[in-house]
Amino acid sequence: MGEAITKPVAVVTGGAGFIGSHLVDVLVERGFAVRVVDDLSGGHRSNLAHHPSDAVTVIEKDIRTLEPGDAAFAGARYVFHLAGIGDIVPSIEKPTQYMDVNVQGTVRVLECARAAGVDKLVYAASSSCYGLAATPTREDHPIQPMYPYALSKYQGEQAVMHWHKVYGLPVNAICIFNAYGPRVRTTGVYGAVFGVFLRQKLAGKPFTVVGDGTQTRDFIYVRDVAEAFVAAALTPISGERFNVGAGAPQSINRLVEILGGEVVYVPKRPGEPDITHADIAKITTQLGWKPTVPFEQGVANMLADIERWRDAPLWEPASIAKATQTWFRYMGEA
Ligand code: UDP
Image (cartoon, rainbow, N blue to C red; front, side, top):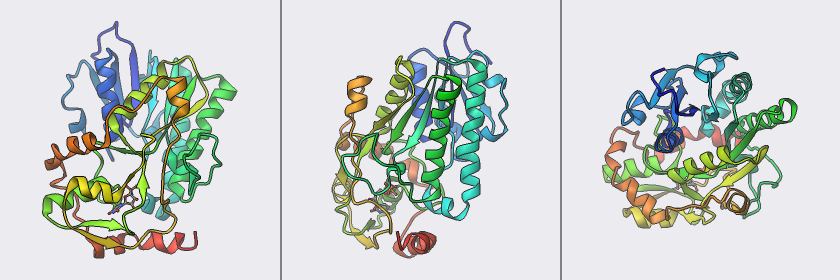
């Protein structure tokens, strides 16, 4: 790898993806040599194209093929494990694949980190583990995954904590609420409100507001999420989960107001929370991290970059109804 010998090495699995690529940006700025392990199934090389090759090395690899001693992890000080597969509907349709990548893949990354003797592994956990939660939601809230994606991310986190307990591997988990910002993923799969709305805005079509739009989400700007990962790596604290949200939920109606445009309403989805709200007292007090980008500013940054969504799928009520059929079928009684 063409990295300068004096720089500390950080491995970022999933580093070509949305949150991963912003984390790479922060690590490069902080003087790390970064190795990205990514199979490019969800991420894109273009997310990293602004970095010179001596700062960031991209290793195209599926985490399920990793073995202890893999060259990507040689001499690494930190591992940030963000590789995985997301989205609710495909997880209901293909649970085996989700458990395979998000759980077994995590075990392989843990074994590589253990063999390399890293100072810290930081895992990207999901707030979906809390299910329909009491708010504001603390880290010790009961766990209740509502669909296979949530289960797989939680079991991956349990593996991370198990490696801490059994093998003494230093670890932390960053439990991400709704991350948004430039480069947010737009796969062909329906979901993630920002990709849906920005494409609709570009096309001059109405925003497909779910329910009455009064539901709120604890949207957190991606750069702030990236900073939380770095804080969780550099702290001497280990074996902990830290919630990362803005601690200030925003309604979908407020998002529509900022974006500006017509709306059309689509049915509320079964099992989806009316409110998500992270209690962020733990990370602010223990790691000194806090959100820095106000919602209006974060949305403005995305609007400045809106051309990126020109090729994203354009959703409308009929195609949403079709794409969410499985969701309504399996979660209707939730
Ligand atoms: N949402 C919406 N219209 C859409 C997609 C999503 O109003 O076309 C809303 C959805 O009801 C939720 C919020 O946006 O309140 C975030 O949805 P997303 O799927 O991005 O995340 P999650 O529901 O997993 O928090």
